[in-house]
Length: 224
Image 1 (cartoon, rainbow, N blue to C red):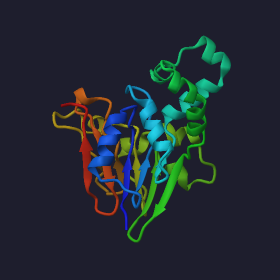
Image 2 (image 1 turned 90 degrees about the horizontal axis):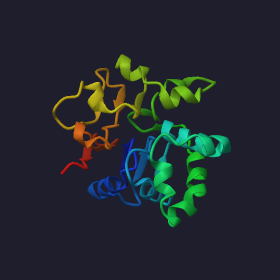
Image 3 (image 1 turned 30 degrees about the vertical axis):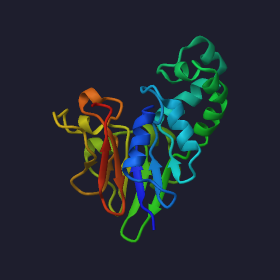
Image 4 (image 1 turned 135 degrees about the vertical axis):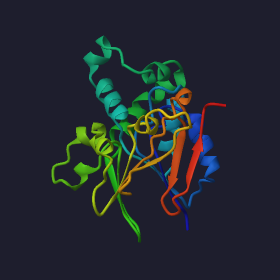
């Protein structure tokens, strides 16, 4: 029986993703959830998107960066007159291979789900990019799921659930400590933040990955 892993905010660090999959010995029996923000900042968005979109047991959720990129790309007037505010478009347009794949990347990102509910024998997990509070509402506001960091600000989860989010690098939550970033668990045990700031190695950021069955944490960093 395989393991269930969760990570977030890879931000174009394709080589780190590959390194992490090797470190956890990711196999066809395992499942990996990526809680959005696979693109922007890092120089390898195509490597991330290619790997994730071609691997059946990797389930990606939508982050605010995927949502922003799709909205910008599909608005032809914005695309003509307003430059995309991060580096993903420029990188993907820089080679014929990725330029040809660009419409497919956009379709993939557009179809990404906003959240995931996962029930195990011990816990009921709620997973989303920034906030899981909307998941219990009839009308789920996309903007809050993708952008709202108030759960992290309050440092309190939802009774009866374990929420797992990304969006806010954990070195910010901890006040920029000197030690490398690590997965953050709120005091009530009901909120876990897995964004360890992979694209910010100079701030101690690294890519973190959590195993839900064992609680084991894994880390890889671009800083050598």
